[in-house]
Image 1 (cartoon, rainbow, N blue to C red):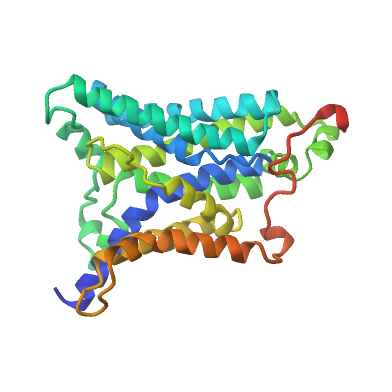
Image 2: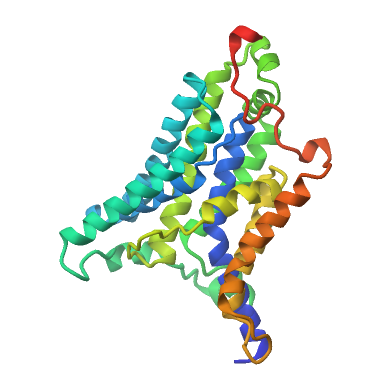
Amino acid sequence: MSFWSQLLAFLYAAILASVPLLYGTLGEILIEKAGNLNLGVEGMMYLGAIMGFMGGFLFDSALMAILFAFLAGMLGAAIYAFMTVTLKANQNVTGLTLTIFGTGIANFIGETLKETYPAGMTFITDRVKQVLLPLRLGALSEVPVAGKLLFSHSIFTYLALAIAVAMALYLRCSQQGLNLRAVGENPSAADAMGIPVSRYKYIHILIGGGVCGLGGAYISLVTAVGNWQPNIVGGQGWIALALVIFSSWSPVKAVLGALIFGALSVLRLYIPKDVLDIPGALFSMLPFIVTCLVLIVSSMKMKRENQQPAGCGINYFREER
C-alpha cells in the first residue's frame, strides 16, 4: 500500500472514530451551557448503546434504533436533572452515579439478551445495517480523496455535523440560546429577567443527554457493526468530557477536537512496526494521556469567553437570590 493510500485510510478511520466522541462532546456542551456539570456522559452513552441496539434488534428498524438511543440518553439525563435541579443533589456525585448505573444496566441487558437467544443470533439484520453503515452518494462518493473522506459515511456522521452547526447557531443567534447562556453564567440574574431557569435547565439537560445517547448507538450499531459487546463504550464518554474543555465549549471547535482524538485512538493501526516499534498498549493510552494534558493546560489562565460557564456545577437556590 502506498503512503498516500495509507494516509487516506488513516484519515478516514480517524473520522469514523471521532463520531461518538463528537456526540458525547456536543451533548455535554449543551448541558454545561445550562449551568450543570454532568459527569455521566459515559453512562448516557451506554444507555444509548444498549437501547439503540435493542431498538434495531427487536423492531428491525434503523429509525427505531435511533429513536430508542435518543430516548434512553434522555432518560438517563432526566434522572440526573431531577436529582440536581429539583432535589439540589451534588452534581459531581450524581453524574458519577449515572455513569455506574448506565454502564451496569447496559452490560446486564446485553448479557441477558445473549443468553436468551442461541449463539450467533444477537445481530442487527442486514436491512438495518444498510441504512446505518456508510452511504454511497453516487458520483460524489467516487471523487478522488474528497469522495472517500467526505461522502462515504454513515447517516450518524452527517447528523452529528448537522447538530454541531445547529447548536452553534442556536447558542449565538437565537434568543433562546442567549437565554440559555445567561442561565449558565448567572442563573440569579437570568431569573430576575424573567427567564424560567429550571425549565431551561431541564429541557437542555434532556436534549444533551439524548445527543450523548446517539453517540452510544453509533458505537453499538456502526463501530461494532450491530453486534453487542460488553464494555463497548470503553471510556469514550470520559474523553468527551475532556473534549468539552479542549473545544472551549464551542460546538464548531468540538468537531476538530473530536477528529484529533479520533486520530489518536486509531494511530496504532497505521504506523508500521518497522517505522516505529512501540507496544500497542502505549498507543492505546495516547487519547487518555492527551486528555490529562488538556486538563492540565486548561487549568492555566484562559480568556473569559473560553472558560466554563460561571454557574456550571453550582446548584441554583432561588431563595438565596
